[in-house]
Image 1 (spheres, one colour):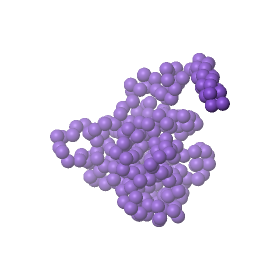
Image 2: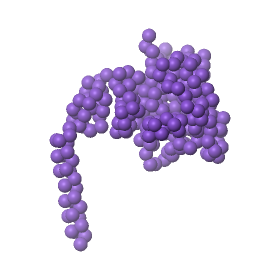
Image 3: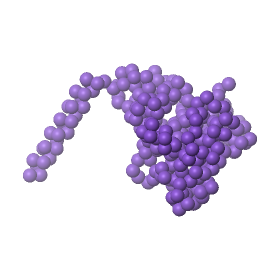
Image 4: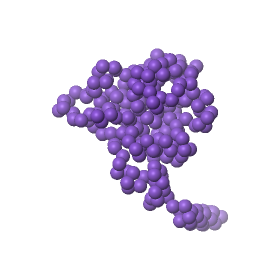
Length: 257
């Protein structure tokens, strides 16, 4: 009986492989950014991959802003922004600069219902923020207002977080902070306008008082633009008792001027 079951299992695997092969011929794999045909599923074509700008050292130790050179100093590098306006979070990291391909991936995830792009985006985030992930106790996605969540049907930050921290050591908590008022889109807002837009927009949930004290939190979102949203969330987490707050995003807006 065991031999029969083993043979049936092998036949089943062979049938599934055959079905996958036939499906790949009928529906070829395509680039998750531009839609060109690619060799592998869930990846970028060569042209899109080559235009991604990965964020690597040197960068600001606090905000993750790429810096032109390390200055030959052994001490942690800080950008002028981090010195003049220290953020509420301890460290921020992002995988790539928010260039055209990164923008398309974020757009596909948020507005085109391409939930399949979340996993490859999260893989790049995990590489960029490996230290932050390793040191975190809890992962907290930046929350959406319930009305926007109802319209979009999912929270892109929570989806990235689930792929960033699959079942294992890290626990994802979506019940610790909430967006208590709907904020207008920040796409066309400047730095000061963004900060005003999210001021007092977030608040702790009822479970925050018991879950956050003394914990190291990894805050997750899709894009770091000015840091206003991450900063506002970090302030709430700290007031609720978090001992350390880091932020990890897929992309970061960088002004190369």
